[in-house]
Length: 568
Ligand SMILES: [Zn+2]
Ligand SMILES: [Zn+2]
Image (cartoon, rainbow, N blue to C red; front, top):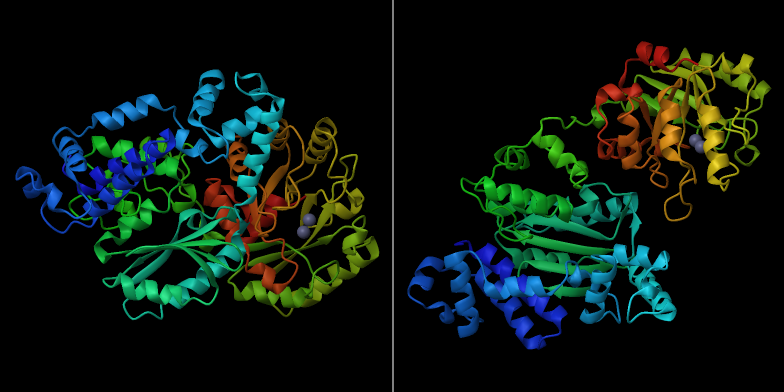
């Protein structure tokens, strides 16, 4: 193995495993230091190894030099092998839980096959840990508490807030004269619902100047790590920020390495081995020649279809891309109609004309006016008389605007699974969105029945914000989702992907489960104001994470076809 970055990665792994093993901490640090020295090496590694002159590198002593030579010549290292054999998988991660000694980690692995903090949490919740030798009821309860503490420590914030922070940071960095390029990577680029750390990759020949500029960021309150090309810090909001500066030549590769989930990247590394693609370390990524030109280039060389950032989670996308079966996800530009919009008729802030004009300005061909139905008293739900008045106003506004106005409702799904307005009203609407707004906490059986009944009603409806979750405040409904999706598949119904950043409902795994059943979707904003319309891209991101294509999304259709498709 002649690549210094690959060798450094192995040295680092040794250091981490030694720490878990409880070895002398100075020894573990020596491996970390050696790894960094190798990465920063300017000279010719081949020449140094051949002349046995590795110890001339600052930070590399005789013991480390012989291990580097071993890896260089054989691609392997007996010490690492031994450590890997000695320690159960996941030991590094589990060692983060306070009070978990290596002995205990091994006992948990042998008894219950525990390989991650998540495994351990589930086992504690099921009461399995108390029966493992060396543990009891008390220590199980303590472990669970410690895990929760560990999780609570992670300040996660909602996607749209993280996005705003990230944009501000990018803007601040762009004021640095030496910056060539900078982009968001990590879970934010994958558009996860909540974000713990904003990762930014920047290209510059002068990393120091860029890091100095970064440190002048007003929102920065605490710097936990500062190296020659990397800084880890916290914003006042508690959100973490990591900035990595790489050379322009490494930029694409680093951006790619720091975007995909770790599982996604690990799988690609494995594939890369067979294709002569060299992956250095997680900060710089691929080190193949000829130079990588684009992220698409990386996937092409790996023999895969291109995988969009939102899909890089190791949830089957690599296998699908290898088989040429990965769908081409929908794009923001594909959306032609703004669906699920509220006005001052219920709890919105703008009138029909203002909403229509704003949607028109965004390039939309149609907008559906869907205010709350009469039962939603808390949201000033629209009674039948006012609904008729709204239809008149829609007709008047239609004469003044180009965008097509559709009359609809967001009807409550009542406790018994029926909708709010009588049939003679429902049949005069262009679109019905059916949502649950009350009685969220039904038992699973009852909720499953309620939803199935509503979705099987004999006219077309869109299931609005399906599982009713509010991020960080209300969990999804308890229901047997697979059965409900089966009901959608045989009913006159489509599912909404709700782009309100507090909802982002449905979750990607359920979107995929629904599309596997041939279900159709709409992507909406659930806008309660003009400003809310701008959330459309969050809905599209959720849809992309769920692998939806343009053909599966009804509001990617032209007005005529959309109206036919959703007509009740
Ligand atoms: Zn609603
Ligand atoms: Zn709504």
